[in-house]
Image 1 (cartoon, rainbow, N blue to C red):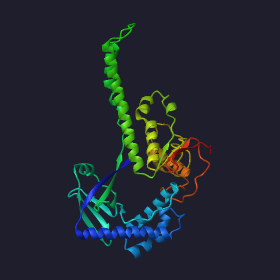
Image 2 (image 1 turned 180 degrees about the vertical axis):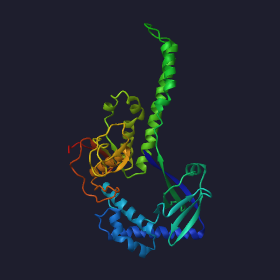
Image 3 (image 1 turned 90 degrees about the vertical axis):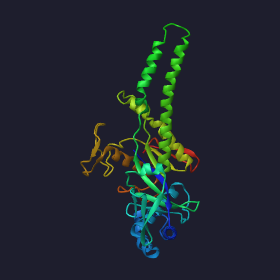
Image 4 (image 1 turned 30 degrees about the vertical axis):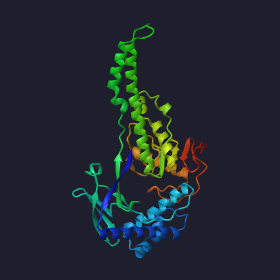
Length: 374
C-alpha cells in the first residue's frame, strides 16, 4: 500500500524569479481555460486532449513540451472530477502549475529545486525546517506543484510516495498482554464472591492494555484514511467479508489486528466530508483475473506473482488485484477503462453492477448502496 505525502516548502525568490513565476502561472491558467473552451466537454482523456491542442498550447503560450502535457492532464482530471460530482468545470485561476520529473528536480546538497519556467530553467532556494529536511533526506521526488498562496508567497508542494506497512499493534503488545493476564489469573480465587481488590486492580490494568491497542488501531486508521482520501479524487476498495475471513484460524489474529473494516469506515467518512468518490466493489476474482487481458488464472494464496499464460504478462499479484479493483470502481462511476492509464471517456454509470458495490460521496449528502446483480 502506498500513500502520497505532500511537503509544503516556501521558495526564496529574487524579484526576477518572482516575475518569471507570475508569467508561468498566468500562461498555465490561460492555457487550461483555452483547452477547456475549444475541446468538447465530452472529451476527458488527457491523451485525446493532448492530440487536439498540444501544438496550439506550445505556440500560443510558449510552454515547454511537458508543461503542455501537464495542462492537458489537469483539464482532463478536472473534467472527470466535475462529472463525478455532477458539477461544471470552474475557470482556472493563475494560482498553481503542475510539474513532473522532466521539468522539476530537487537537490539535497544545497536544498534547492530546479524548475522549468517560460523559456528558461531556474534553480530556487527552499526555506524549510527540520521536518521537511528529514522527509526529503535521501529522497528523489518526481512530482510537485508550484503554488501561489493567499499570503502572496510562492510555495512548492513536493509529493513523496511512501509505502505504508501496518505496525501490527496487537503483535507488539502480546508480551504485555500475557504478563497482565498471568497476574490477573494468579489473583483469581475460585468460588470467591466478590473477588479481592487486588484482582480488580489487575483486571483494570489488563483492560488498559487492550484499550491502548484499540486506540492505536483507530488512530492509524484515521490518519491513513485521511491521507488517502485527501490525496485522491477517487478511492476504490474491496468490500471484504471480514467475519468470514477470520474463520481461518491461521490468519484470524493478523486479519483482526489489521482493522480493515474500521479503515474502510473512515474512508467512507472522509469521502463524504470532502466530497470525494469512495467506491466499495465486490472482491470476486480480483486476484485471479488478469488485469491486462481478463483471462482467469487460478492461484493459491501463497503464489505472490501473477503470470498470465494468455498475454504473457508477469506482475505482482497485489498490483494485478489493485488494477482489477480500480477497473471495477471506474465502471461503477461510469468511466471507460484504459488498461494503460486511468484516463478515458466518461459516460453515465452502468446500472448493471455487481452485488455489494457501494458509493460514498457527499454529492447528495448521504451514502448510496448499489445492490443490483450483474
